[in-house]
Image (cartoon, rainbow, N blue to C red; front, side, top):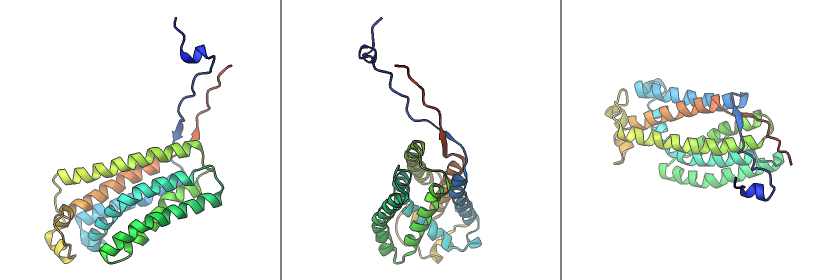
Length: 228
């Protein structure tokens, strides 16, 4: 029987990729439940915009534009938050990332004419990183989880975008009268049919919230022991 390269060199086989158990934790619930509440609020807004105020329609539009930055920034900051470094160094790095991404958010604020997106960016970022403060010390499994979750969030965002663009979305309570009352200008699909972005926000935050609240790394499986 032919020998493998590892056998010829008398080396142990390569260890398997890192594995981790995914189970709810206090941190995951604290991070996920507010996003579920966000999603439910947007579903209610789609049905009856006056429940939380018709400005929620415009807020959904702002938030989903801002989410394009958040989905990247929270992932990278989460990776740094779970790094094997001192708390002071991790905190300093996170603030540095936050200030870097704030420059892009400032562009949104200048274009929109108000600074609500900046406050929203920092509040959502703090909420998404809260689990790292509450949960145990960072591990390799936490790092692997943040890399995986960032890819999943980007995919979920794109699915929400394309599904609400391609599929028909009823207006329900977000009527042309509501759009005109909010003075939504522009020729884009979101501006012409704002119910689409409201449904996108509702789907995205509800699904993301359940994913976050129900799965977070807790402990690694014992690594295999190889004999020499």
